[in-house]
Image 1 (cartoon, rainbow, N blue to C red):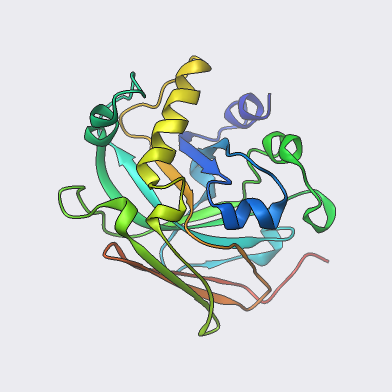
Image 2: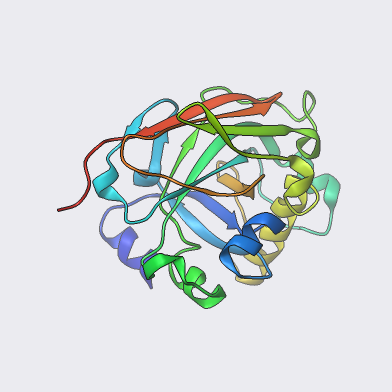
Length: 221
């Protein structure tokens, strides 16, 4: 229903997101399984941009691997096909958000809230899976130059490609398979971190690269 209203209002669907793939994030939020949502074009920001804090409610930042699909995924049980469907992997930051006060949510709340969606940032340059193994990436993220989160590809359901396969299978079950051209956020590599007005986050996801985002100093009145 939410998706249909957004599409009717002129938003364009550009991909999907997987949430709650990290045990650390599941513990932080208080849930025990992944969820998923959709990505609209007006959620996407450029690497290094400043996001208006007034657009958000109680944002948290997480670093992850994003995939651009070069072909449809019609068989999620075929791990080779899932991997082959990935055209490029990118460093990404997702800014999750919630309408539920103080993030006191359960799995039904986050599902109803489009997997606690907010906005997201994708790196400028992608890397072929011939050059990187997603489970081997190493992540460190700073806020105002202080280390606030760290993790690795294996912290995302054992491998971000496992998360992609899970999402692909779920999408097939719902009759809406992942398609060529879709962007997929595969889930957090480490703990999520609350953002405040004026904050700047920088994530190093090696060997994919570095990505950053900042927040304006203004809040809703």
